[in-house]
Length: 420
Image 1 (cartoon, rainbow, N blue to C red):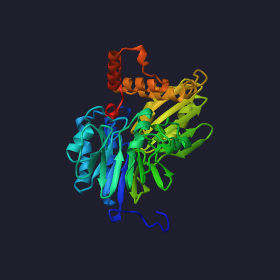
Image 2: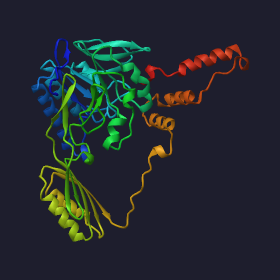
Image 3: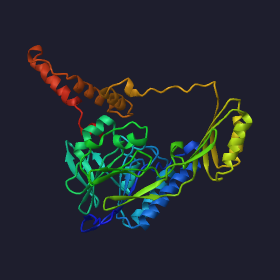
Image 4: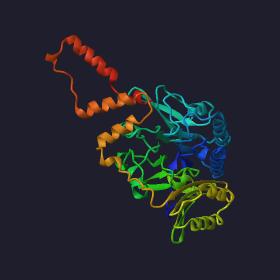
């Protein structure tokens, strides 16, 4: 906290909570079952740190699970960690992310029924509890978290078009935290190449924005508040490597991203590092086969044996990829190696979708990519709205046809129930 900061009181005392996101329990990265164990252990370590720090509650901003139908073992792992909070009387609030959201009841509902977490977002039925309350909104119920006089408002991951419609409904009455699993343009535009869902000026006011979906830790000021991505707890792919090793003419080593979560005291975040298995991203270039092997061995000698390496090796001569893999596995826990013969392959130029489609068409594509029952109906409604289709003139149809048309229009109209 900055010098002279007096703190914001909630319910008469200073507040502290843990902000997690993108935990991805059950992810067998590179088809390795022991990697799922790594993801579990990282979450467990993070939970133990949060409890030791004396948090009042915890927030999970989506993707607790890697899949929307986790295995029984993965569910048991979630139960084991969430019990760490429950045994200390610490409530956990969560939303579904893009990986683990479901059209029907999900593993989150099971955990909620076990009293292990409180699921935020729109539902068809009212939910009330020690830490949950419901507000009727357009025929549906917005289930919100409550902690003393603080509102914790959120909803599951949505398409770009859906979230634009829903955001105005997520404004709190007093002190509030907004929990979402979406990409904010002003955050990723700085140094990340990611498609975005919303912009800062679309966000309703909140005292803290607890976001997930971006796997790197990022913080941005929104007025007097913080918008925070704590990042994933484990190294999800080689873009999140602990070190980037580049060996062309000379050896260059760049530090990667630290992994962890945020402790938030009176809406001010503090990043807490969590120990993870090292994952190294290696890029190597050589003219001769012997040179490539020598450079690769030089790199491997300086890596720890429990690490994972993802290597891309380019050489003017043919390389024995099987031999290189055997060398790597003699020095590491696991390795993924791709080799390329220089001069024979051309890297295709990927042209961004935005060069082909306008904003409306991009939104439509986003909706149609969703594997959800209402996606086509939502797309049709969006097209009708965009093109300004109007009902027929009275003189062009009989009264009976008008009534039938109105009923059909009402039946097709998209409401919040279509998003549940």
